[in-house]
Image (cartoon, rainbow over all chains, first blue to last red; front, side, top):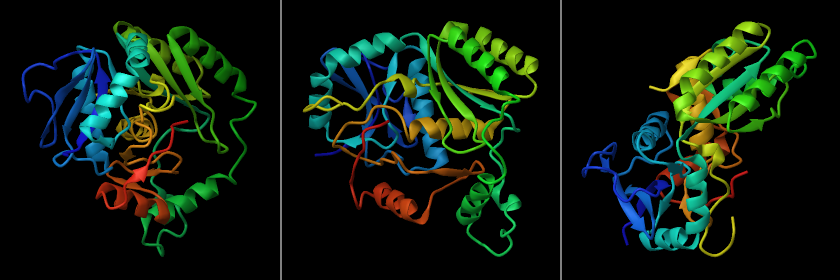
Length: 240
Length: 74
């Protein structure tokens, strides 16, 4: 049986004209089950190698559908037999429908807070061993290990400001998931679920927070599919 | 293009990878390119790397040689 690449789940029964949504060379179509439908493409044609380009295209598929419908994103690279997919959707129809209602009309915004400049730093330039280590991954990991010894976690100096920013973001969002950093000096990350209609106001509020608290660097990206708000795994046999 | 404020496109890509590769619905027990729990690191905007071990797992999963049982997301 031909497997399908699964992008997400929606309660829309059709996604517009055939071929409107594409993931590279693969046409994305509806796979209806009950009142739900999965966005799928032929796995043989889908670009599921985990490169930045493919993940970006994957997101564009979801973004295209999210303009008109509520969507629950699957993790990138989910490949499944259609029969299995149908059983999963049928078995979890109620919980998936409830989650669709939860995210309908909303988008996810990614926030990072740090007491240092936020950037995806060039590890090769930063590593003292960059000249003799040819593998960028090794250099990057060494640079990250060095970071662990550079200082303490986000310090007392900015703690009140971070607390105020967190409180404000919690109030601005419908829901917020905070990801506490495991490493010293790593940024605090948040996923904010906001109404799509309030996106502009939310961004302005974040910019105002960043301008007011100059000791804290704030980044804001999105809108993303609601990856952080779709719950646990789904299965046709046990509760995820 | 998604909005980016205070970060730039590299951060936007890092935020996307954080989500698409680690979050979202997982069909429990199904073969996926699951990277749950893997310490992915990002270099620039073009190259996605991991430790040698996880890079090997990614490569195997991407070509379907070793279908991997996916972990439940955190």
